[in-house]
Every structure is written in C-alpha cells, then in structure tokens.
Amino acid sequence: MKKTWILVFLVATVTLTHAQSGNHQKERKTTFGLEADVVPYVLGGFHGSIVVGYNQWRFRGVYVGLTTPNSLLDEGFKDNKVKVGAIIVDYFFQPNWDKFFISTGVEYLSGNLSHEKVSSTGSYNSILWTAGGGYVWKFHKNFYLAPHVAFTLRVSGDSQVGVGSFTQSIPAFQPEGGLRVGWHF
Image (cartoon, rainbow, N blue to C red; front, side):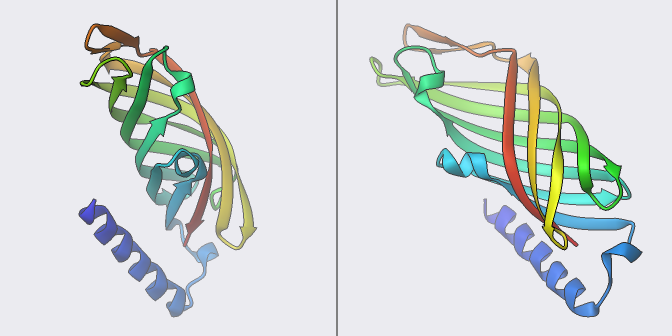
C-alpha cells in the first residue's frame, strides 16, 4: 500500500510539472491519468487506477478492495472481503479518450469470507478475463465521469470456498459496473 501512495505522489508531481510547463493535450499522442471508481467507496472499499494512453488506446493498472454486500451471498455467509489487481486495455472510437470505449483485460481476485455459525474464515483466489465498455463524459477539460459495464469470466482458480462445513459457490460468470471519476494530462 505504501508503494501505491508513493507512485500516486510521483504521478501527481509529474502532473503538476506538466501543467506548469504550458503544454497542451492536443499536441500530445501519449497521455497519463488517474481514476477512482465510486462503487467500491460506497461499499466501504477503495479503487485506484493509473492510466497511460497512446492515441485512442488506454492501458490501466487497477487495484480494488471492497466487501461484497451480504445480500449477494448464500444464506449465513458474510464479510466477503475482495481485493483485485487488474491490467485493462481500452479502445476509444474517438481521439483524446472521449465518448464510447470498449475494454478487455485480466484480473487477479483474492478474497475471504466467513459464516455466521463458524468462527473460521475461508479464502479463495481466481484469475478472471474481463470485457466491457463505457462512455467518457468530459465535464471540464480533461476531468471526466465514465459509467461502465463489464463481465468477468473465471479462467482459473477456485469455484467454491469452504468455511467449516458450509460451502459458498463462486460464479464463473459475473456482471460488474461502476462510475469512474478521472483526469488525464
């Protein structure tokens, strides 16, 4: 986590230096940015993305942590804490990271959960393929909101997790969505 904050600080420093130099985004083919998705924060978690783009392509390194609502788990299961690291590639149909985009990538998911009748926890890991898309709405220069939807498909890893004598199935196919807030320079 400390390395993540150092990296965010370095990116912010480069951003401020770039902003003061007077360069204009329209003159550049390569651009950098930061994003945060609102949904994990609503669920008491976090989301951070460091983004590098070239022309209409964008490459994102993503780190997410959240607790799944208990209502989405089988009866008795609770506290499903999930952490995800991902590498995602986006393609925009317009230049300058604008309007519609499609995405694909790979995610590594690690989680653990508990059951109300057992004091122990169970853990699981999966590698997921993801695909989706969304729309970038720039509301001020290169600040933007990006609603998006996607699905994940487990390509390897655990299909269920045991906690004591109880078993929670982990779906192979899952939808996901969110609202990212971002900025690029």
